[in-house]
Structures are given as structure tokens and as C-alpha cells.
Amino acid sequence: MQNFKIDINVDLGEGVGNESQLMPYISSCNIACGGHAGDAETMRKAVRLAKEHGVKIGAHPSFPDKENFGRLPMEIPSVVLYKSIKKQIRDLLCVLKEEHARLYHIKPHGALYNLAAVDEKVAKTIIEAIKSIALPIKLYVPYKSVIADIAIKNDVSIIYEAFADRNYNADLTLVPRNKAYALIDDSETLFDHVYRMITTQKVKVINGAEIAIKADTFCIHGDHLGAVNLVKTLNANLKTKGIDIA
Image 1 (cartoon, one colour):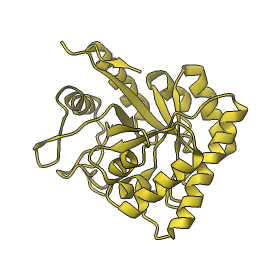
Image 2 (cartoon, one colour; image 1 turned 30 degrees about the horizontal axis):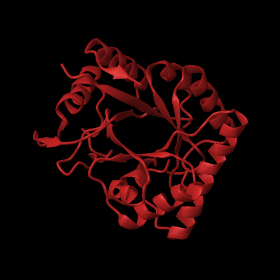
Image 3 (cartoon, rainbow, N blue to C red; image 1 turned 90 degrees about the vertical axis):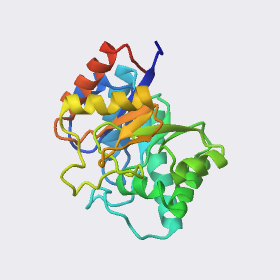
């Protein structure tokens, strides 16, 4: 039997306040760093909890749009977006330096993540911001995405990510949040969704087809209603199947 090892990541520092409950069941976290949520204090709290639980730390930059929680696309000049992303990452790096911790990865948030998957201009802006940091940082990206291709061409290390708590369209884009079936709320359905992706490298999309996908890290949104129970149950069920989480 093939041995599988996967990462479970959660978005944190977004004002929900459930970080301490989530940390025991995840292996990496994406910390909001001021674009859609977060400030120095929330970053510091999340970093300290991550260190305590041995969880890998990532930056979670967004469009600079707290009003809409970074979930709506913004039409802003590339240079403005570049400066915002770079500042968000550097703000977290300052906290990490104070707390003697290291940055493992970067994962864009919300509309920025979704646009970078299909929009070359946005993807290039993110890659340039990451390269300017000049650190060996990994980038969480969707499989077969524009940003994945550009990252590879620019020698930026990538880790393919899939979403445990979201349904997919046939083109591997996420079902929009305004659709009733966008989110997966049932813990057993969520486990089946993830287990299929791990063991078959396929995802069952909304039209019932199974589409090829690759992922080494799986995300559950920290602001998802019931996130703690979903993560706890997923962790337990995967371990029951002999799948390592690290």
C-alpha cells in the first residue's frame, strides 16, 4: 500500500479568534498580514501559537481591501499591488524576526489567489514581489494554474494546493461563494473529497466528473463556520487511513 503524507493548512489571524483551537490539528498556517485583515498584534499571536505547536508559518497577502475582506477583485496598477504585497510580507517578516521564527511559505488570499490562477499580469506581480524578498520561500498554488507556470519559470519553489472545504468547477476553478453549493460543511463529505484527491489524484467536480488534480497541501478556511470541527475530524480520519500529516 502506498504511503501518503500531506499538509493541512488554515488561514489565520483574520479576526475569528479560533487559532488556539485549530493549531493542534494543522501542519501549516497562512497568517493575514494587513491586506484584508490582521495587524502586528494578531500576527504575533498567531506566530507564537504556530511556534508552540510546531506549525509551519506562511504569509497570507491580499488585495489591500479590508472593507471587502479581500474577496473582491481590485483594479489597481501593478506597481501599487506589488508594493502592497511586498509590504504585507515584510510586516510579517518583522514579527517573525522578533519572535525568532522563519517564514516557510506564501499563499495569496481570496480574490488575489483566484485571479493569479488565471491572470498572467496579477500572477507576475505576485512572483516579482516574492523574488524581491530574496528568501527561500515556497509558494502555495493551484494545480495547472497560471501562477504555477510563472513561478516554475522564475525558479520559485511551489507546493500544489487544493481546498478541502470548497467545491470545484470542471476547469478546476472554485465554485463562487455566492453559490449555495460552494462550501463543504459536512465533515464526512469533506473527508471523502480530500481522500479522493490524495489517493486518486482526482477531484469530483460539481457536474459529477472526476478531473485530474495534484495537491500536497489542503486548505480549510479558518473563518469557515465549524472550521475547528472540520479540521479536527479531517485530521483524525486521515490518520485512521494511515496518512501522515506533516
